[in-house]
Image (cartoon, rainbow, N blue to C red; front, top):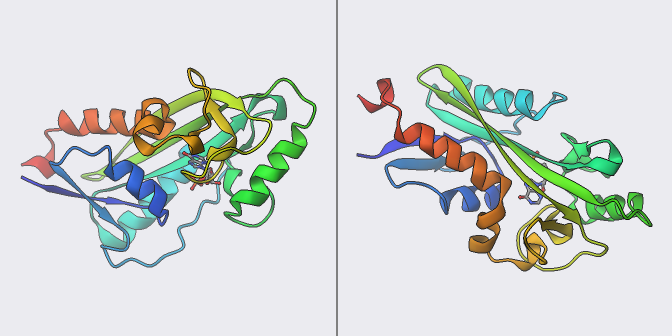
Length: 199
Ligand code: IMP
């Protein structure tokens, strides 16, 4: 049996990452596949609220089971900035190069470069919400390195590696990835779920 589940994001990189982690009994449906073209709002100050808002937004228009995720980079020396504002840190939404430049500039000369990625997934299943968190700790590199991945990957070195995420292939990134940890919790939950969707 295949159980359809919409992933409420327009980020093709995230879809590719999550697809590479999914158990085949749940069929991941992208917004594009669901025929939904929408700019999903992220108006809140916490990852938890934004993740919920995104899932609810899609649930309202589809009435189908769905999940969303929101991720932030939290840099300790910057009081956990950019955090929930990671995508628009340098002003313009989703300008990865400008965001990285701003981050490196703010940390210039600072040897305290510890940071973490935090992902929150919000699942709306049979009308109830469930949240799952994944954390990856690491450090911010002095300069960008690598061509893979997206966002802050070229400057994030996860603990336990000497490479940035952008120097890794997707399989290696998944060994450390915040998103992978949150998705693993989601998948574990789904594999033990015996509610309405599985009747
Ligand atoms: P959002 O979850 O789409 O709001 O992403 C927030 C910001 O974090 C964006 O700038 C993303 O590019 C960045 N981001 C999210 N996940 C990752 C990741 O796995 N690696 C690097 N940057 C990420």
